[in-house]
Amino acid sequence: MKVGSISPSNPGFSISLILLLGAVIVLVCSIVETRSSNTPSVLITVAARPETPENWRLYNPDPNHIWNRLYRSLYRRVSAEGKEYGYDELDPLLWYSTKYLLSQPANAQALADLDEFLSTHAEKAITDPLQRAIMQRDLWAIFDWTTEISGNAPEKLKLQQKLALAIRRLALSPEQISRLPNTYQQTIAAKTFASSYQVTRPEQPFLPLELLQRQGPWVLLSARGGGLVAPLHAETFSDRSVFRIFIHLPGDREATLDYLKNLSLFPRPWIFDPATHRARPNPDLPEFPVGTQLAMVRTMLLIDSTGKLAPTNVIEDIQVRVHHTIPRDVAEALNDTSRVEAGRSMSVFEFKFSRVRLFAGSASGSLRALAKGDTEFPLFMSHGVDVFEEPSSGGPLERSLRVSLDFCASCHFRPGVHSMLSRSRTLVPLFPEATDLLPAWDPNYEINETMGQKMRQYNWGLLEGLWRSQ
Image 1 (cartoon, rainbow, N blue to C red):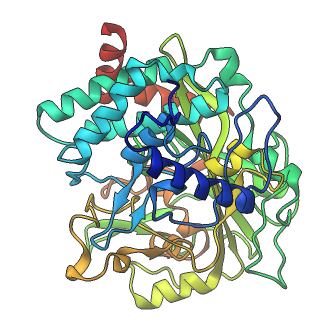
Image 2 (spheres, rainbow, N blue to C red; image 1 turned 180 degrees about the vertical axis):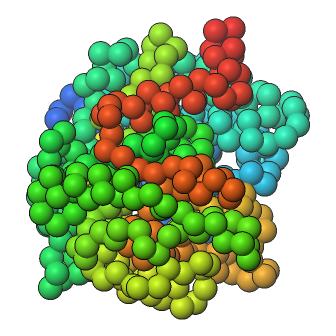
């Protein structure tokens, strides 16, 4: 029997038939577009957070296909009320404190699905390089998460061994990886979003047309002295993604370069505060003008068929800030006033890649814009607390959700140039001139530095060892 097939001899035939009939109805109503005939069709579902197994159909219209079941067993989280989350999330809903996937019944289900995937060589069931790449990406995220959990319980070791083997079998050749689509260019070509910021429509999502052009108006930044420009972001996702920071002042590229030069020549960007014994931003630092735009671009890494790290063209996330006012006071701490001022002083936009759109070859592009009220469970800056296992104040799980676009102001609450936290990434209290930002001296520096950091991590060494031993 083929994986995911149904026969009358199967005890669950009648139930499966009902599910299949329901799937046909949903399929007719929900498919927006399909790819070419030699690529498996993919269902685009309306529900943002599916609540039934039938909706987990990323890789095949059949929810019982082993690829769909494996993805669901690893990425699904369930609330106390039985509602399912995790479908098409950018990252798995797992934290340092999470016990899920290492406890029963989730561990047994994940191991059973991995066993079936491996024993039937299900990696051959789907040959589309894009789908194989994303499945490897998602399994890799789970593997790295297991290394953040202390202890060497048998459940954890078995999960790591099987994940490593599946990751290896899904690996693409370097040539296949180089041909993966550029999700940013796809979305730009679709013309789904405005290409520039509209002052009269400050909440309208826009995706900068020239963001990634080498000599365009957006300038790629590097940290003075080397090191990653966004180390906290990279570390949070275990250096499986490359994070790049861009800046664009009103005017042409030269205007941005001139400002960065003046900024780098300023003698005391940081001053020592004897009251707190810490450095703080110098309020006299040259401020960038109203209308300045900043962008952070997150790009996917993969592991190729030779076992080496490989950069891709798959953009996972783009965050854009437009500073339409510059408050005068440099707040020293986050409080209600600084949060409100930060929220009023900038417009924030975010675009996340969607597996559903990506696999379907959606004419609207593979990046989706977050709406003003969209919420998410905190992963970045979450302190490792699993909101499913430790709900806040014992109340509904939804209390843990935060408004995605508002969260930006919670960190970048200082005005203008002082909101650029990458400037203080290595700040040592007694040496306030420790770092600053410069135009990138090498467009591939962040890629190479990220891969170098990844290869120095314990989880990479463990994965390499399991990769080669099986």
